[in-house]
Image (tube, rainbow, N blue to C red; front, top):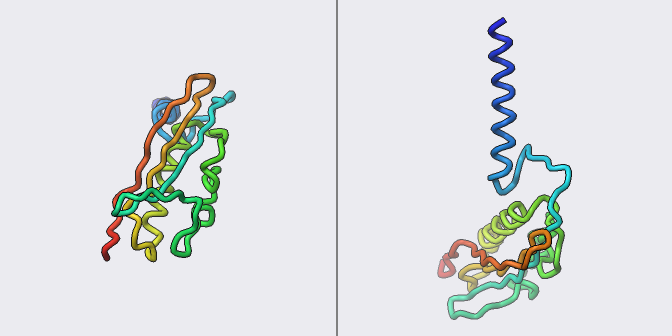
Length: 142
C-alpha cells in the first residue's frame, strides 16, 4: 500500500517539476499552454569582420548562404516579422543557437569575426523590445 502512495507522489512531483521548469526554461519542454502568446519577432543579422565592417547575411559569402544553413523555426528569413509559435524565449534561444551554429560551420570564411543579430520582439500587445545576440568569436586567422 505504501509503495503505491510513493509512486503516486513521485509522479505528481515529477509532473509539477516539468510544469514549473517550463515557465522558466527557454524551450518549455512539457509546458503546453492552451492559449499561447501572440508574440512576433524580427532580426537583422550581420557578419562583423576584423576591420569592423557589418555585412548583412542576406548577401552570400564564401559559398555560404544563411537560408541554406538555417532553415527551421522561421530562421531562414529572419528579416521578415514572424510569429513566435512557441514563445519569444524559445524563438530567441533558437536564433542564438543558430548564430553559433553558423559561426562553427563556415570554415572557408576567413573574414567574419562573429555574427550579430539585433532582434526586435513584440510580446503580445506590449511595446517592441530590442535585444542584441552575438555568436562566439571565431578564430579567423587559422
